Image 1 (tube, helix red, strand yellow):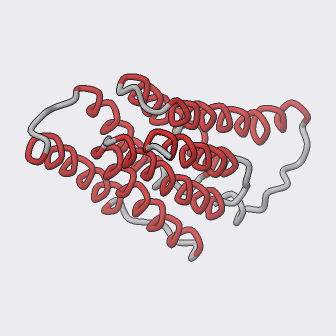
Image 2: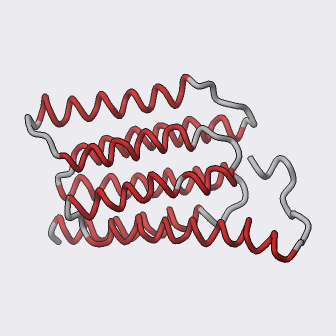
Image 3: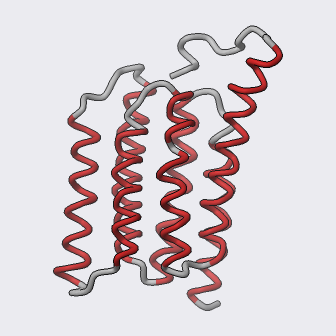
Length: 191
């Protein structure tokens, strides 16, 4: 199998994991599936030679594991953590693009903005707010992958993630409000 074929296979697995994460009410499950999906997306970027995206996702995986740890212990992370993960993403951008590759890809700035957005959005404990705000960095990730001409399944994966997020917003927020049904979530499950 070629590297491109492997990239397609692992990005398909990533798509399934990440998209399914949006249909859980507990943020800890959401973060666990997001993290697993990130591992497969990193493999896809490795296969296609998109090293900044791969390192950015590695930082994203560390971020997901960190926030997951706080969630399962029902604790709030301090502002230090989104600042740390944002800073690591910025440093990685400069090391990879300027020092190692000695080239700049303007599209990487779009991805960098998405990574910083994810760092601050996933820091938020309220899953409803996360669902709404995460549409912004996900849209930036789609744009980035279109611009770098990523493997089609990577673009589809992020697009499917955005669609799944919008469907989960409709399911948990919009349709529930219209039907005036009492919330099934306890206060603990919202986090």
